[in-house]
Figure (cartoon, rainbow, N blue to C red):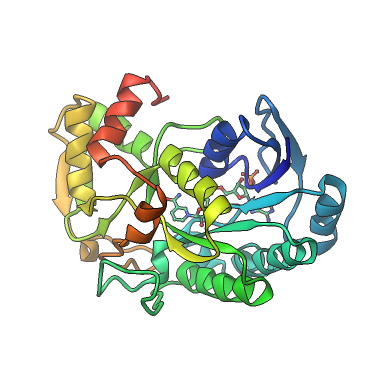
Length: 294
Ligand SMILES: NC(=O)c1ccc[n+]([C@@H]2O[C@H](COP(=O)([O-])OP(=O)(O)OC[C@H]3O[C@@H](n4cnc5c(N)ncnc54)[C@H](OP(=O)(O)O)[C@@H]3O)[C@@H](O)[C@H]2O)c1
């Protein structure tokens, strides 16, 4: 089996990719602060912002391909810690692209729908980027810097993701479900729209991109949905009490990072390549059927 290096294997998405890819690849997964044993995966502790450590990992592992998911992925944290998050989100990403170029190996990068300002959705790959927060700006810089170093890279713009809790990472639905179960108030935006997919679907898309994509591709879901309507689906599919579910607007909640209202992705290019996300209801139903929630 060939060697696949997955950065951020302890993250929500990295963990899901490990589960799928281990059938086909010998996997080396990196972590920083959460030690985790994943059966069948060799875990390596590495601070990706340290170029010497990064180079050592490439020299030791000699991967045949790389999927780079590690990031500071919280927009509010990036907004309040711009210099610190720049190191992992921009500098480390560009260095990884450079090392993949040096070794002429395929590389997939996980960017975000937040490279857009939310005013002209749905967005295609050819639309101009226009981030409204520092996290989005950092991903734009990483995309450009990585492609400049290595044009063969697959830059995958990921949508909002949800799914089962992993040993070291939650998705946003677990606290929602808990709040609804306890009949406490859960206020969700009626004016914020995304094209979400499950972590498993996203992982499938990234493995497809590793094989078939050079340049930018959108890996959004097939459905544009507001946060509030997503909450209603959670209530229906998980048969939760609806009493706590309330609607609100973005302007009602102050957060460090500004939030674009509608960054729905047009992912028809990926659909044509064989990326086939289910509807949000079907994805949630699968979590119930497979008892994958906790
Ligand atoms: N989640 C979403 O809805 C979403 C949406 C769009 C795009 N994305 C993008 O998709 C990717 C994966 O997101 P995620 O939600 O899976 O992220 P996550 O759960 O926050 O995981 C982040 C990962 O990065 C690692 N990491 C952070 N700083 C590091 C450093 N300096 N050196 C080495 N490793 C470091 C963490 O390691 P430890 O935990 O071991 O410290 C963890 O494995 C990210 O690039 C994110 O920007 C996510």
